[in-house]
Length: 610
Image (cartoon, rainbow, N blue to C red; front, side, top):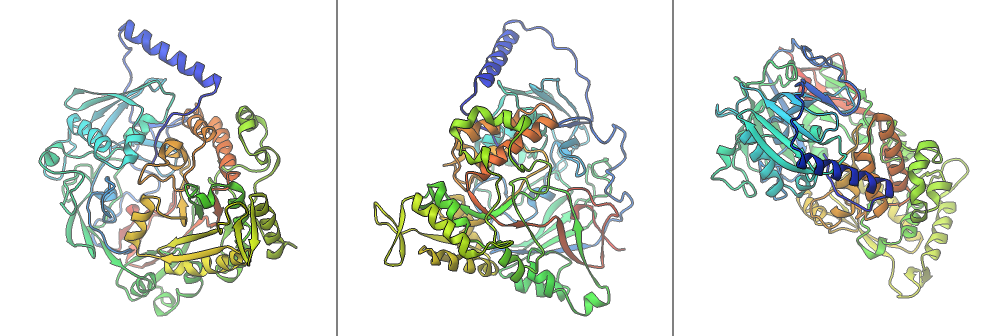
């Protein structure tokens, strides 16, 4: 979920780095014995853990949930060709990372960012978090019965950082040394960094069996059925069409507090559909059991019929409190057509959210104004107090609007019309050097027309894009809408082979290393990174470092708000909308806990009615 990079440093951070390096040098020069640390059952990013060492289970599960039954799910995509979601090659089957592999630690869903022991029984971390030690459980086993050892953990780290997706090389970049201190004890040392998140990041690491991969190619494993240690193993599958996960009956972690009441289905089966309309009708016909609805039109009009009337299917909008992140039209600023932020800002005036919400979405949505929407991390108003202090050193490098204008995406609300917005767009485009010639918007100097391609893989989204295109055409801009299959879409996006896409940029309640993956300059040319926009800014690089180094929750909030504000005024996306509810429908064979955590619906806590 994250990554890392270094950037231009302020004087304060340079001095901090010098102090850290001096301290590290002193440590090397004087090998004084470290004071013994007390092993703990978990670790919180900031503050205290919610659950004590003897907690029996998470509060949001039913510890008495029965085991059994089959959960049938649908995936709308053009199939899969891999069971390895940890490499950049291929399209992995849904569910592999969630069900097949256990991690060192397990996050709780009702805290901003805390983890509790899973493969690792306890963890040891000094106050300055310059290293972490994981003490593994003696009973931890892979599916083939082999014990999970510190050597397997070391192998997992090495294979992810050398053969895994480029994401992992950056995610774990600040690890300076890995030491196996015993068969079930491993230590990770960190370089000169103030990244307090690193122990938790390593806790998220999946653990692979070194003996299984000794004679297999991790990068090109394709449909090789892997050996994991999680609650499920891969059972029957039809390449590209379906895959079934079977619950491990002698699962080693069955009775641990972090697993109690969870992963209750005997089988979880995914069927692949090429068309979402077909998938919806298949659900209503009883061919699968659960559906998370993403279409406002479907939610308003399609969930009707006998099964709904008689209670066979339950339809719920479950409130959640997780950050919704940013969904929007994403500009690829690597392309010359979108290199000027004034052009990007101008195009935002051609998207009419109010019309879209009223005519297409039955007014179900709220406009998104932040990359950290639906959380206390979202910026608002003008910067002040601590947030202004953070931004002040960068004033000369930032758009003045960061300090003088409250960010709001263009609107047609109130007495403002689309005609008003298009006039504003024309003014910005003129400032950027564009003029109208023969009905087309062209660069005044080069004569090159302003034209681009919108890349889609969901046909249902065309109804959102086409009115947007019509407004752009009124400005003299040519827009080609290209619909491709999901596999081609994935490959093109991985290689940044697009002008504009629609994309969701999710966020957690505790941002950290993953911010480097989204907008750090080191990921601009890294295939497969989530820096879709091509953000490359020394200021943003340093703000990311500040977020990662936040010493407490209050400071984290101020630093994230500063980053959010700079991103918004960079006009890298045209914001869409968000919903603070999970729209779900499910057949009454399924049951769920009475408590929903802040993170929302999680099927790993559900069960089948006996």
